Image 1 (cartoon, rainbow, N blue to C red):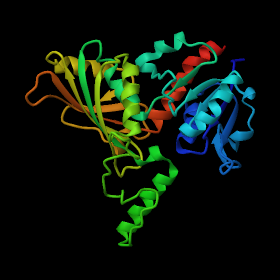
Image 2: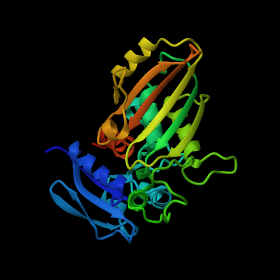
Image 3: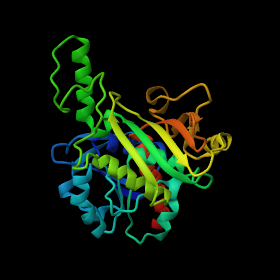
Image 4: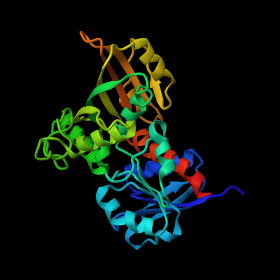
Length: 333
């Protein structure tokens, strides 16, 4: 009989947690007992898994010694509160909140990091933006000497949770029905609008999310000195992040070579020239990063520009975490 693993998911009632459950089932992950955990406010709800409804329990009361693998999908505060308890119980921990001191891994980019980790393993599945960029840039780093990466990240509302999704839906309905708009979750109108920051900026004007992305991308590519610029924009899209990316290299770029590399890169789907991907029409519900509009600089032969889209909750979050688990359970047998 194949070996199975008892698993816990912390944050099981959130969008990311529910997608983790879905991906585990779709990929036939060898789950023994599945323990779904959340705050006391969400305890008692049920989530479907393999034809049954699994009841969600309160994380505060859970004994982590019952499981061997734990996914944390409930945000940084919850991870800080419970990851150490899980590790002391001997659990392998995959943290989707990505604490800065924890090794950050995307299987297609730096899976070799896993071999050097001692049990019980504690690793981070990085932000959706870092996952998408790592998938695109990891196969290129051997051919291009990257000098500067400049990214404009158009981020979906769903990264902020169900309350944000509900707020966008409510604002949209109010505006379409010509009713007065009263912002609640956001401090202003987000429907049919663009917000040039996601969260509160730090003293220097940068967002914590932007700073996290820079650190994660450098780590994933093993390029600690890489110059990275990013601006995160909140867009009125429910699911699916999009990125306008500009790369500068130390030598003129061979676009045909770049195209060939991306066409064969794992986890990447290149859209044919003359067409372009969108989050709603292409990326949502899919397991790859879509890339298109590949072109050189207008007047700089050392520049390459492209456009990419990813399902931020699925490929950028849940799927990456499950792929990490699939690699880690080989050492748990």
